[in-house]
Figure 1 (cartoon, helix red, strand yellow):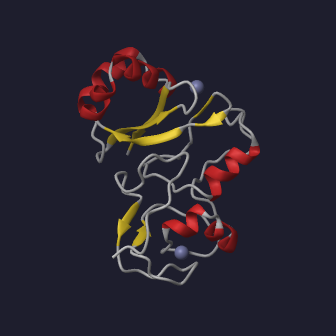
Figure 2: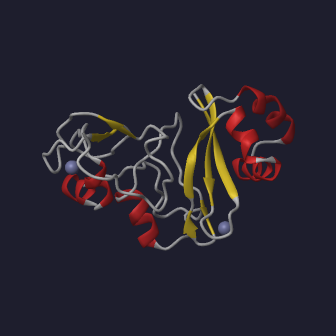
Length: 180
Ligand SMILES: [Zn+2]
Ligand SMILES: [Zn+2]
């Protein structure tokens, strides 16, 4: 049994639904405890670390202890990361990564990191509505004709999906196309 409620993350809506955390009787390499949940995503560090618990991600202890980051392309110096450094710090060091084929970027809007909603396929995109679909298409920089071909064949866990984000301030959607 999980020993306590999972931590929540400002920039990651539902890590269990997204597959970032899975139940399991595994000892965390950071706190050296088995707490019922284990992280399934990537961790970029010198030393190869496979097993981390959600709590050691949330409090920053895993990133600090192993000098690692949960999102590879955090772009400390990139113009698109035109957000305060403490935001980047939270996303890099205290937020689980999400599964993608290509480089993982964190969408930003209104001078803040956006909330990762999940990987979306056709059904998930349609459920967001037309306005959101168009916002995602625009931020993903996919031409209209290409988008018309892609939208019907997207699958949340397939070779073509969209990483969907939502701005925590104005509610705008954004995202990146992810192709294997
Ligand atoms: Zn731990
Ligand atoms: Zn916004």
